[in-house]
Length: 93
Image (cartoon, rainbow, N blue to C red; front, side):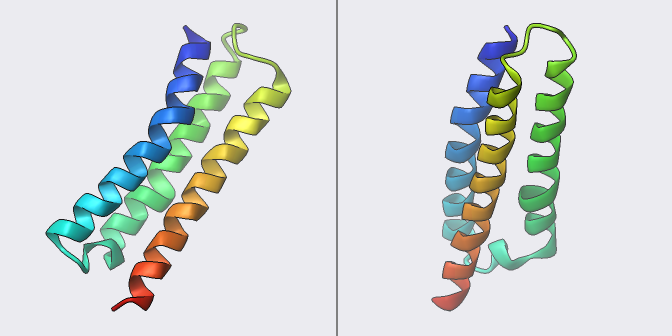
């Protein structure tokens, strides 16, 4: 069960981040520049996912230490990529 949750985090987080970005840009082109959007998608969601990953490690059924660190690095990379997408959108305005 724990490994399935980690796989869901690894697969769904990037898809969800990109989908929400494009839906926000389509509905309100300046919505991605708002403080609420940035706080939720660049701080809270990645923080919660990292805390869930660390919390699942305490169950004893989590994957090896290196895989947990890889998942945390993946969350950081996706979050940085999301930030870069916002910068690219800002350059186009």
